[in-house]
Amino acid sequence: MDLSFYTQEVAPAMLRGLWVSIGLILPSAVFGLAIGVLAGTLRVYGRPVWKRAAEIYGLIFRGFPLLIQLYIWYFGLPQLGIYLSPYAAAVLGFSLCGGAYHAEYVRGALRSIKQGQLQAARALGFSRSRAVVSILLPQAIRRALPGCGNELVYLIKYSSLAYMVTCIELTGEAKILASMFFKYLEVFFVVGAIYLGLVSLASWGLSRLEDRAGIPGFEYARR
Amino acid sequence: MVAATPVLRLEDIHKSYAGQPVLRGVSLELHRGDIKVIIGPSGGGKSTLLHCINFLVSFERGRIFLGDNPIDPADKPALYAYRQKVGMIFQDFNLFDHLTAIDNVQIGLVRVRRIPKREARDRALAELARVGLSAHAFKYPAELSGGQKQRVSIARALAMDPEVMLLDEPTSALDPELIGEVHAVIRNLAAGGMTMALVTHEIGFAASLANEILFMENGLILEQGPPAAILHNAALDRTREFCAKIARLHPAGRETP
Image (cartoon, rainbow over all chains, first blue to last red; front, side, top):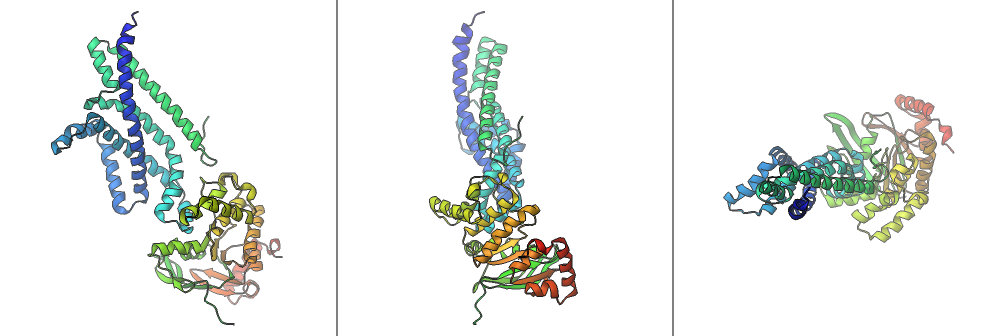
């Protein structure tokens, strides 16, 4: 069997694609989480108008297919005179879509915290917003961690959609390579395995994070 | 003796939940060093009253004064300052579950009072020592017994230098054998001259501590007076009946010195 195809063609292309994918995933994960914490918090503790806005945000960004969202950012916005690079459109799309899902986990976690926690904070002289930030969110984020981690795993895989707006990442490189050499099976198997590797790495990191964030009373049952 | 201004004064508090009146005109004065114990059946408005005093629930009518100052809950900075002066102890402790005992005590100092962390830490340790929990400072609530949790929550309130403490059935959620340690801490506060309003069913404890007992039912304070008068010589049949019942459930022998 001739391995030169893999060493000469596949490896460099996958390496290029991998860097682009990581460049998409990391900022999208950070922005997505930040947006999700904000939107989820507003859903529960925001003033009515913010609460409503966060609801509508969640509805739209969980309702529109992600691919359509990406098309809107990349192909649609130029009609309004706004031109995004493929990379910027992809990161924007992933962050906003991921944020909508993170918001659901954060909202659920905030709701699961007993009302007494907020009451005790207010009794000490905390304003509502300060109580939410210093008392409720640190607890809610711990509880939301497994759900948010799952969303990050999804992100790794749906980052492959970036190639549909011409941001050539892992999947894009694979598609080009496969059609060039007509070796779809080999190339897609390799690229699939790379995603599997990324997901495994992320899962390992997330479970480490859960362990570190776990404190008595907040540990996750695991066997 | 000239009558001093009360530390805390409630004037005709009315409160209803969904049209159902819970407080129907409650007035109350706490003078410096006063210990008033509120007794009465469940649903009578005792707990709601304490929550109203802290503005943790809103009420339709009535006013609350700290010293000479009426408290306006719409004036947020004033409200937050007021709440620091009125320490609140809850039936189920409400310790911040993600924080150690010492962090529970110091977080108000750091985040609300903006005291430097080191200073807040020293103060928190001192408050924990005051409730006998120095050895448990770095434990999380889940690692503490109910009695220890309640003592941490008392330390947490004390750290804010309250002028008044409101205690809402502080021992109701505790195993009987843990009640004593919380009572001892409350007794210490009393000995230190702390002004307190205490809701409890522990009638023996109440009798030994209070300078006045208030019997509350259906949103009204029906009768009030010195412990002996209320517990053994009440004017109203209803008060006598309640006291007799509760004395059987919470025998005074355990607590009366």
